[in-house]
Amino acid sequence: MAKKNDRSSLLILLPLVVGILVTPATLRMASIMALSGVDALTMLYPWVEVVKNPALGAVADASSSVGQWAMYLQFPFYGLVMSWLWRSRGFVTALTAVVFLHVGGIGFCYLLSYLHNSTPVKIF
Image: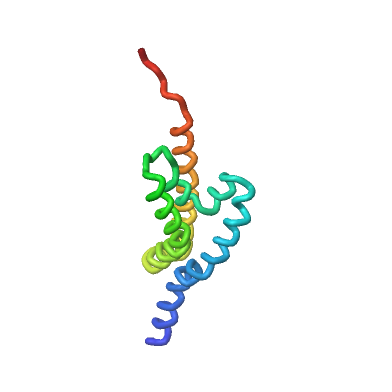
């Protein structure tokens, strides 16, 4: 019985390990995708674009360093969330939650860009 429990514990940590291992590849992809423009980079690293968005009013130096941290920690964080949810809710729910987290970041980034670029409505 202990052997099966040990294997399932290691299997649940697999998303975290994959998130750590995929980070260097995504950083390489980001350097290539940056040539395509901001929209391509937003699809890969939405939380970096959210942090750097001027609509939040963050200081440029602080948002730059937080953005760097977000680049390195985004996919390990996804793996950690997926491992945590996989243990309690199952694989499909964990994968769905991580996909919604990523797509929600993309949507939030576009919402902030829209709010930053929209002109305020003058009532009087």
